[in-house]
Image (cartoon, rainbow, N blue to C red; front, side):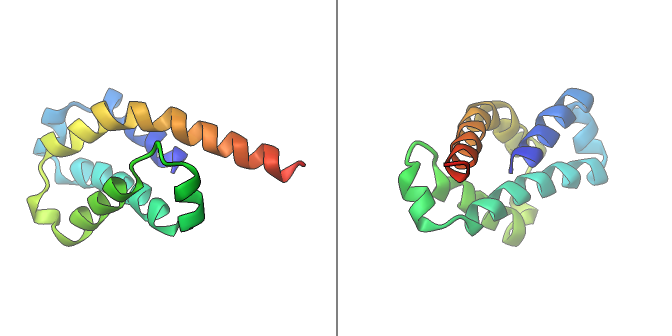
Length: 107
């Protein structure tokens, strides 16, 4: 999940929304990374989700379903909004959760 977030943030700095609109390969590369975040969320246990209620897990998972099943409804502007608005807030949460999991595995 963290790798996909970083890929999206990096990609949004290398490509403009206009480039993504003009090149479907670039656009769907961004979409795939958002799907990966949603799929990783889907694979989390309910116990983990319940222990970390600050993250909107259901919203992330629903976005994945829209991207996979309603891909024709997604626009570059919607994807860019997720990248620029949602991911900067999500990234520190995921980093924190990884650190917590790693510290628990050493106990």
